[in-house]
Length: 70
Image (cartoon, rainbow, N blue to C red; front, side, top):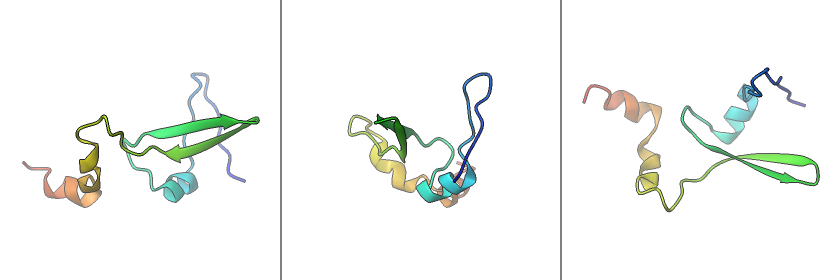
């Protein structure tokens, strides 16, 4: 079982094992589904309403390094 603590500001750190499993990186959005007393956390998929959401595939660490000086 993986756990984390809640701060006084109702914040928590998503444990590394969860970040790895969901392939989360800085700036990613996550979704929460509450059902029957349980919460399911998932990596949010880019919204069709976001005109730049389709470019997410080019937002990797290598891409940021390659274009950092532009």
